[in-house]
Image 1 (cartoon, one colour):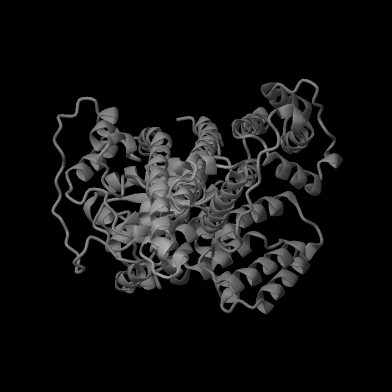
Image 2 (cartoon, helix red, strand yellow):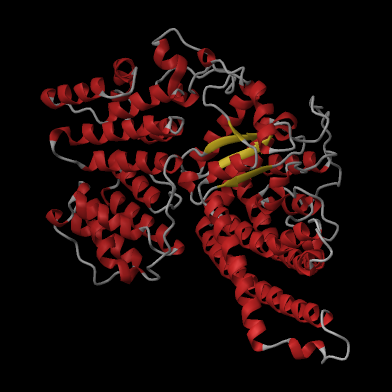
Length: 631
């Protein structure tokens, strides 16, 4: 599955969305002008000129400007709210974050599945969220970019799907992350809110108090509201068509991507069969979910007309994956929750309902499965059944799921071998305003330093997922500590740059709102200087001929006039600036640069751990899926 072409398609769909939004807004403006002209005419004495005579240029400009300003303000406010990050979107809909050290078996399994798919997709582990007490089987991914993405599923999905079927649904949502669908979904929700707001305003005016009938203005409010409601209803119809036109094909593509991630087409088909044979299906009760319905795995509300549905029929999705399907669904015993409705009524009630579910978390029985495998210990028989070990229980008992342990593990990566510098770094840790960090560092340092370098990336990804659980003040102190440790020897080497940028890129969006920048470079030739800097540094890192490695990579990009830069011109500052500029490439150019970097790294017949980490760091800064790299 070509996720980079998927990203480009998402960008084209965004342009289509803008065009449809302009057309829909123009239609609403015209309808509003017609309504105002009729309203003015009805208020005049009989025998006056026809209503069309009151459709004046001045009136048209006034009404149009008012509509444009109103719609623009609503779209801007909604975009600001939704673009705050995946966590903000999930919490707005009543979802709750699943704690890393939860003791609930089904939640541990859910976390493991998300981590597995993240490793398969070569991307950081996203935040894990749950919509509690929702019987419908559904899921969604939210965020602006992979670095601030979250995965959220309903409790009904966890209760009724087997592990392999849950993997299929999570893989489907990862496709939306990698293909740029999340940004498209947020833009879609924001623009559609601007269109439907007119109807919402009209509904409020229709039910407002008329007050004194002697006041013409007050008595006219319900009639104005009726007109706006009719106009808004037309907007809702257009909005539904826009949602359906853009969303349906993306769902087929995501189903196919789920097959690629899981390598199990039967599991993807079975997940859809279970949902198809389940009475609540994919219905989500929360009202907030309806506005964001196009981002879910399945339709949150039933649609009577297929051409207005945001998702293809379940039957059609199954047959795309399993053409020989016999038409029989899979039935699972329905679980009834204590709540009488099919879901929580408000986000606040949803969070309260989740308290009991998450309160049973027992950190003493949690073990980081991947960490245990990296440490050379025998894996447990059940991949979702964690148990503490006798050796170094403080490390293995909590593992990287504990934020403080994860923080200590990342600090250990930056400790110097020079005695004088190391003493200074340890003094910084002891003086840091992070209680318990120094003692955790003592326990975990040996395991980090003896960890195979090829596994260091995996450890960073898993640890970053736990560091995101810190409070904002704790993170600020931790970030300042890392910077001080790196600068302790007054030199920033390449390894420190790579690891710090990976940590920063994976953790920062949890605490600081991501700033989205529009692509600038349509052609690689426009960024040839930056590409040359990155490829030159990689060429000098290898054991082979730098000129040969650079030439092979440049030829793959079609940069015939590019020249190998001396190592002195590839400083950390120059390299960092070049990578930051390359993040402004158009989507289809980014994987070409990563592929060329891989060619330069493999020119000596091997890719060292540092070269591999460097490519991952560049991919992270560019918000681009990482290609499979040979070690």
